[in-house]
Structures are given as structure tokens and as C-alpha cells.
Image 1 (cartoon, rainbow, N blue to C red):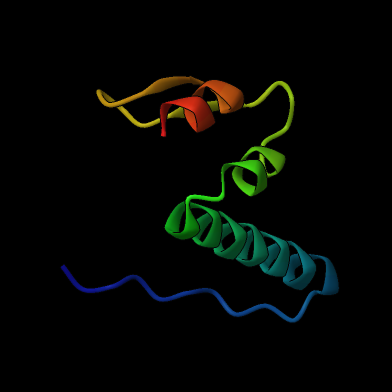
Image 2: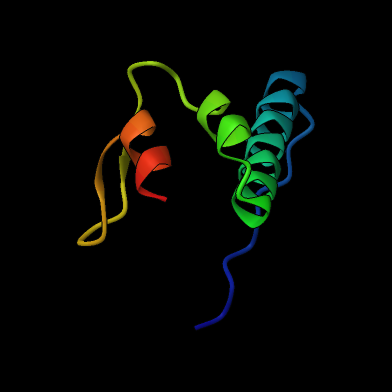
Length: 67
């Protein structure tokens, strides 16, 4: 399957939102790679939910404990 083209935008709010999402993914990846559970827990909102299909489904705090 060919990759889908990414929409290019010049709207400041959209660019800021994209950058915030990119930063979150990078921080998440770093925390997982380094097994830095304190950092990982800080990435989740107190009322967050995380669903990994059949592997895990629960709150962000439960996910951090599960990892």
C-alpha cells in the first residue's frame, strides 16, 4: 500500500498543533526507549485512557505500571 500524502498547511494554529503532536510522540518514544516511567507518566493527563487493543486497555497511569 502506498503511503498517503501529508497535507501541507501554512496556518499558524495548524502548524503549532502538528508540532505539539510531533513533540509528544518524540517524548513518548524517548520515555519508552529509556524505560523512564516518571517521564512517561507525565505525558498522560490524569483522566487519560490508553487502548492497545487485546494487549492493554486502561488509564494512562495503569498503562505506565503495565509497561
